[in-house]
Image 1 (cartoon, rainbow, N blue to C red):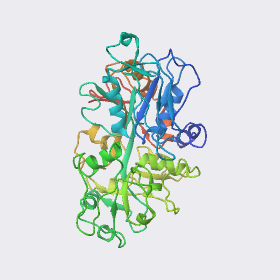
Image 2: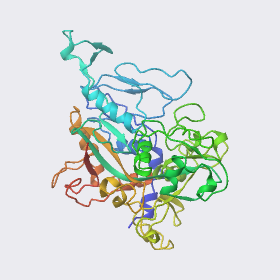
Image 3: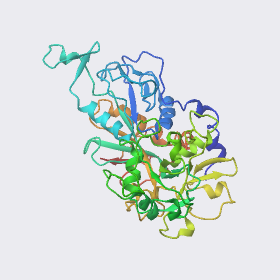
Image 4: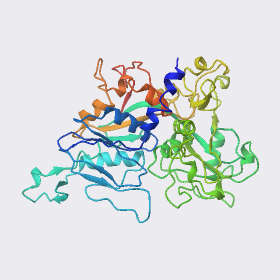
Length: 453
C-alpha cells in the first residue's frame, strides 16, 4: 500500500528545496574522499537530493549538473586534483574545459564514458599543471582516476563503462512514453503505430487516430539514456539507428532545439513554435510527474512551450496479455491529493475510485528484470534507473557504500539500497523498488538491484 501523505509530504517542502542540480558542501575537502556523480539528466534532481542527504565531512558528495549557467568546481582529494567543469548554459561562446576537467557530461552515455575515461587515465597533476610520466615528480603528483565516481544512468548498456568491471545499481522504476504539445495528437498510440511514426510509415496524426496534421519526429541528443532506451526498448531497433527523411511528407528526425542546441530529454519547452502541432518525442514519466506536481516553479516545470502550450505525456496501448487489466498510461492523477504519480502497484488501494486493473509500472514489466523482449512485456516502456560504478575506481568501495550494496546473502547495503529514501524517490516522480530477494540481482534483499556490464 502506498501512503499518499508519506509520498507527497516532501514535494511542497524539503525535497523541492533540495531539488537543485548540485549540492556543494562548504568544507575543506582536500583530505576527504570526494564522491562525484555525473551523467543522466533524468535522475539528476533525485540524486542531487539523495547525495545531499548522504554528504559528510569524510565523504563530501557532488552532483555535476547537466544544465549549468556557472562553472562547476570540485575540490581535490587523493584521486583527483581541483577541477572545474565548464558551464553549459549562457552567452556563447561557452568556456572549454580546463585540464584535467572534461566537457560537462551530458546524458547517461557521457556520464559512463567520463567514469571510464578517468579511471583508465594515466595523467597526473600538480598545482593545476600536468606532470609528465618522465618527470621525477610524477609518482607523487595527484592522479585523475577518481574525478567521477558515480555515473547517473537511465539506461543499461552492456560493456559500459567497462566489460566485467561496470556495475549498475538500479534504485527506482521509471517509464518512457511519447509526448506531444499537439492538440491534433491522439491520447494513446499502440506500440506498432509508435514504431510506424518513427519509420515514416505514418506521417500524419489522422493516420493514428488523431486530427489531420503533419508529424515531426524528435529525439534527444546522442548521449541521452532516454534516447537509447526509447530506440531499443520501445522501437525495437539498434541503439545506433538513424531516422533520415523519407519522402516529401516525412522530414528527418530532429535532435536540435529551438535555439539550435542539442535537444535535451524531458524538455517540452525547447520545441520550436512552428512545430508545436507537429512534434512527437520521448519523455520520462517520472520526470513529467515531478514537473507537473511543481508546475508553479518554472525552473522545474519544463513541459511548457514558449506559447504556454503544455506538453502532454501520452499512453501506449500494447494489447499484450489481457488488455483489460493494463492501463494505457504510465502516469495517473491521484484524486485524493491532486498530484500526479507513476501508475505503480498500490494505486487502487490509494484511490478506490479507479477501475480495477493491473499496474503498468512494476518491475516485472522491465525488460531487464523480466528477461522478456521489449514487445512481449504486458506494458512497454517501464525501465530501471541506475547509479553506475567501475570496480577499478579508487573510490569504488566508498561509492558503493553510498549508492550500492554487496550482492551476497546478508551483504551490506547502503542507505539508498536499504529503503531509507523511499519518500525522496517517490517525491521526485519515480517508484521505489521493494526488498524482494532474487537469486541474481538481489541476493542481499536490498531495495536496489545489481546488474553487471
